[in-house]
Length: 91
Image (tube, rainbow, N blue to C red; front, side, top):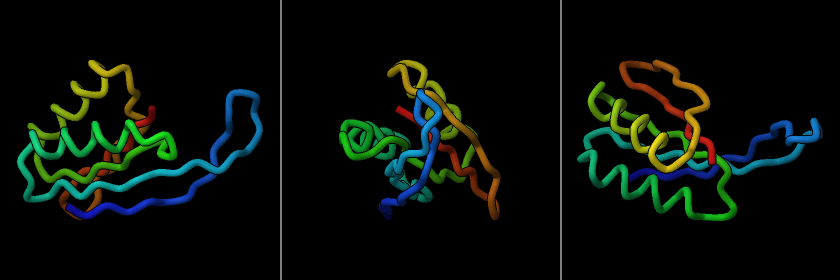
């Protein structure tokens, strides 16, 4: 599993720029169950505000969306990139 923490800036609820931490999980060639477990663990980290998950197939992508909805997280965006999907899940 490849994990990478990224620093980003985003607008907070009051419209002020703030630095947020994102983590990237590479789920290519990984079983969906293990990827969901890694995603759940990452979202429990208080320092992480979003996780970018890289998946290569549609069933896993659908499972990420379903998990996010069930856990009251929000899928911020999805970007097709070089034969994979990059899905950003926000707390």
